[in-house]
Length: 284
Image 1 (cartoon, rainbow, N blue to C red):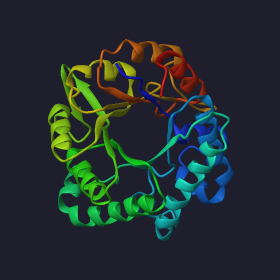
Image 2 (cartoon, rainbow, N blue to C red; image 1 turned 45 degrees about the horizontal axis):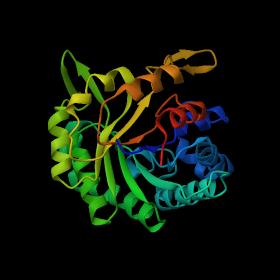
Image 3 (cartoon, rainbow, N blue to C red; image 1 turned 180 degrees about the horizontal axis):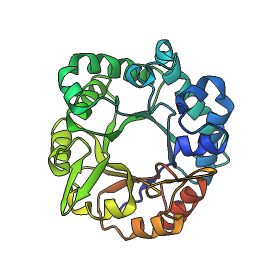
């Protein structure tokens, strides 16, 4: 197996450790605390990440509604790319890291997606074009809830001529894996591959969930994995994630996926996870 690209850990998790209140939009810190956003990218790069994601998971008009940031979509996305680039360029690690534009779901229910496709395409295109103008190295349509919405985002990304990876959030019931929108994960992978995705995978799920769907990954396209540190519990100090870095990396290292290309962490993972992942799985 070729060396994988090692990715960063959770962006919101890192910002929360710096003081971002739980429940607040991480994207707002791109404008109010840019130095923190720079430091997140730099810390992950120093820890061994070959790529980092921009602080733009919810930087689309649907997700920003009611926050007062709706008019700032272009600036939020453009600035987030610049800050991530500044972070990795100031790292002590040699070589040029990559910056991938994070595109999260709109937050609409599947029925709403079906009846608002034109508007969703307009909203996601605005975000994607802003990321493209800022010079991202690629895009990640992540934590995708449904193949229907992911297909809309992928079409807009393809129009921008950017390498695009589609990553689903999923659940396993019995022996069947489905997107959170209820679609077959296997069939969703096939649809995205046939629609021109450059990579496929899952994120925002526990490692044990990924372990049960490894056999569903297509074998003819790069695979992307970014697990959570388990399901969080609310404690006095905030959120506590049950899975340790050691447990997660040990499980990830056992996966037999010849076309595994990108591995990082999602919610609850941090710099120590990236360091351990780099030590175990190498990297580019």
